[in-house]
Image (cartoon, rainbow, N blue to C red; front, side, top):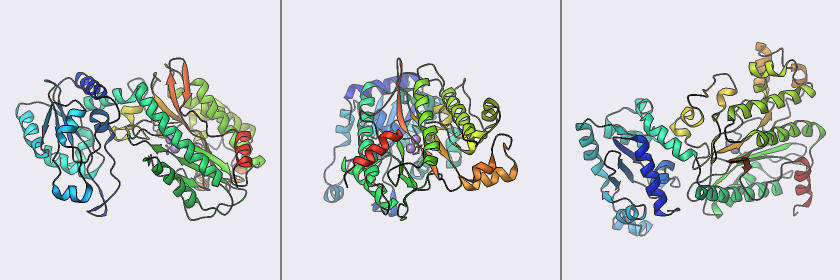
Length: 467
Ligand code: GLY
Ligand code: MN
Ligand code: MN
């Protein structure tokens, strides 16, 4: 457990007040088999369970009676077999004491608790599950088929959890800073290794090893690719080639699962070519522009579109776009180059709470999602508040299949100079990403040490790295 007991007690009390009534059921995660039952993936606790109960063991369920305030931690004690193979672990009673929960019960007791609540005509609040084990468990418990669990999940509970988890406290920010510090070590290691002949897989493996060496995990599968235009290009056995760019998007999560998420795009030869600089510097300026716009009260939607407009202007200067900037952006023409959003909320999940539904996390009554290609991938758009953490991750990608498709279909043809764009089909892609904390007077990047990204800084870093 990371934080003082009082933190978990306050969080649960706030949740109870927000939900108002009914029985809140929050299952933790179970071990999940990889290729046979006893060979499991590394255990990863559910973030919401961890947020309210702070315990890392598998097989736990937290119940909060929103009417009475009665709280129960359910779980089975381990037996001698478990002790022989895995060693002693804290008892359920001790875990409950640690996080300030008054009652414990065996895991099976959940059936009676839920049955009693239903018999009394009370609501049973649950969150949309994302693991199949949890779906089966909920099916057994509530008789709701997995295909309906997402729509029948409790909107009140989702909104309450989002409201609490979206605002990061000082103690959470300190933990996010720790994740960013590990991210710094990962990315600067990748930049030191980025030379012709080294494989993408070697760099990817090194990054993951660094995260693991801090007792930590990566916060998502690392993206390490010379094909930066593939948004989630996982590392291959390919050797890095002189003259190309390496896009590396990777992060760590601390033991308590607070995340970092950074991207750097490094010239494999040590310096950017003029053509690479032309594109790269647009992304740098878009990245820096977000910092000057983001502050409490501003919609992230507007920051995203300020970036899209700057990108369009600069692509016009390069002869890749044309026409009226406002009109081009309204039509979504920029999405040929930037088919994703400027950023997403980040916290205990790298895409924070995405499992609860992106619309609940990133949108509200005021700011509604769009279905337009590109903007539809903007995961966060609402007005910024002090304590929000969002990623700032503009990119420019030349995706040959998308260029061909739009050219053939005449999509946004009045704004796109396809003959010029064709010449960039071998370019790849550039993305620069840092994590931004919204502060009372604006915002700042998380991480004490900045991973170099301005052209001069990157080239200097590469020049001075150890052989
Ligand atoms: N790692 C995927 C992202 O940056 O959102
Ligand atoms: Mn990323
Ligand atoms: Mn990201």
